[in-house]
Image (cartoon, one colour):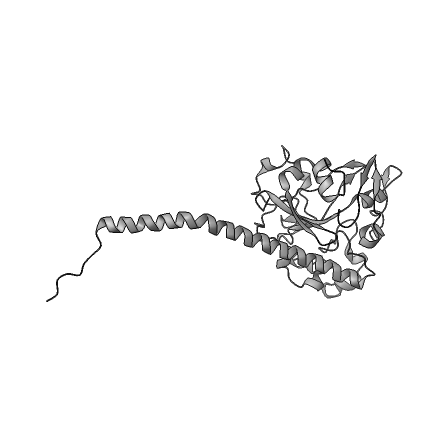
Amino acid sequence: MHGPAPAFTLIEVLVVVAIIALLVGILLPSLSKARELAQTTVCKTHLDQMYKGHLLYAADHKNYFPHVEWWLWDSLGTSYPMVDYYPNLYAKTGGVRPTDSSAWVEFGHIYKYIKSKEVYFCPKDTLRRRGRAIGAGGAYGDKPIHSYVRLLHPHEMVQAYKGGVYGEPFANPLADANFINPDKLPRNLVHDGVRYDTRPTRLGMMFEEFQNYDDVPNWLPVPPDTSKMLNDGNSGFFTFRQLSWNDYLSVWHNRRGHVLFFDGRLQLVDAIKFNREPGTYGRWVAAGGPRP
């Protein structure tokens, strides 16, 4: 007859558990870094697809990029509803905005070239929105539709400001300032004594927009300006001749955020410095301004 099968002693079990715990402790940081890298790579891929969607639209429209707001969504009900300018888009909806806010992006100018709603989001986006953002409920719908925002630029805002009041492009949403042809951009611009390098290589076209409830508030100016969390698809530089960001850059990638430029280049920039120093660092990074 055989004796009882040999068993592990308590000490041996504890040693094995300790080894496993040590290995997990060693591997977890590496897995976390790999996950972060994967999410950043996916985000870059989505922004690259966004850029290609803009290029495909431009190829069909004499090299003009899509409207600075209508590139993204159906803005029916705003000052310049799309239905007034693109009535054929609304044939299947009877001329009204769809109730399901996730469908609004299907009316945007680049959706037919992308055909994927997932591309409009960074994988780091928690989809939790603040009160005045698309996806926060009310007039802006209950479902977020984007993580990224288009940039208005100095030459657009200078053109918009005429005689002490806003004129183009706001008085006419079909003005050229809303549909940028990068090949026709002025190569430099002087505004209020500041010279801007407005070549496509120096002008940011899109960025990841700060919009999550769980983005840490003290990464922003204190207190954060909640009016800069509208999340409507566009963000500007100038407000009545004063340099001002309308939105904040996200801090999703180790306190950095992506900026996509008109030449297709992507750059991860210091989001905290960008948000705290829009008139110097932000202007230099994404508006062609002088180095701070």
